[in-house]
Length: 101
Picture 1 (cartoon, rainbow, N blue to C red):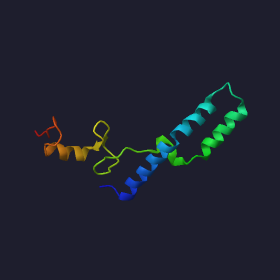
Picture 2: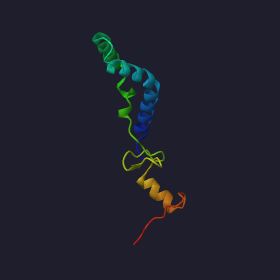
Picture 3: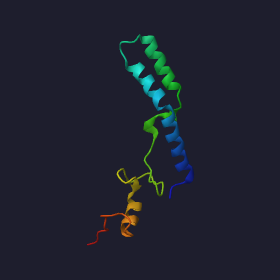
Picture 4: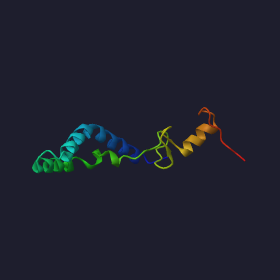
């Protein structure tokens, strides 16, 4: 089980990403547009830099929804390999059987 503080930090980052997504996208579009004057593009870059760091989507980290574990994460199921093994062994995931040989 991950620390509760780490899980809450990740939730806070997700909220910031959702809050600033539109503003961030608009500023990036202005900064990339080569038809606009250089000063306007530069001010867009400065405004983009003033936004909170945690509002950037690449600072998010995938975590297991059951345990909060950050590693060995299956995107399709949104759980970690350990949680998947436990659920599969108890028969709660259809079509998954723990192998043994």
